[in-house]
Every structure is written in structure tokens, then in C-alpha cells.
Length: 108
Image (tube, rainbow, N blue to C red; front, side, top):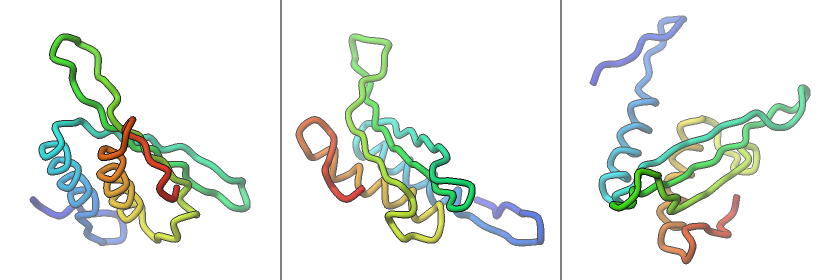
């Protein structure tokens, strides 16, 4: 997979790393992952609220069934990149899917 070229001449594959990990996780666990992001905090201290859902597909239904849910406020994790936060939530989801109800009280 090729590198994306961004303004200033930087190259990155961060999106491909996250996408690849998501694809592997989905195949291994027979789920579909969905990230949801929204702004949080204030103008002086912006933050990011992140949620990750895992959906399965009921063979007798056309609706996706939620199997797992994890969330975090970015500033609580002290991670410096969006990629690191995405990977953190994927690992939290792995833990959550092993818990009853597909949710966890792991540190958010």
C-alpha cells in the first residue's frame, strides 16, 4: 500500500495501520467496527470523545446487532496521536467482547 502525501511534504501510513488492524480484528472476531468521534472540552482546552462499537450480523435479521462498546476521553489516555487512541480502543474492545454484555469497566 502506498504512502499518502500531505501538505508540507510529510508522508504517513497512520490511516492504513489503523485500517489494517481494524480489518484483522473484524475478521478474527466476525464483527464490524465503527468509530464515533465528537468534540469535547472547551475552546481553551479542546478534547475529543471517542467511542468504538462492534456490530455483528444476525443471520435472521437485516439489522446490525451491537456486540461491544468502549469509550474514552482522549485527554485521559495521555496518548499523543489519533492513531494511538484508535489502537487503544481496539485493544479495549478485544477485552470488552470477552466480558458479559460486551462492555467493560476498563479505564476510559
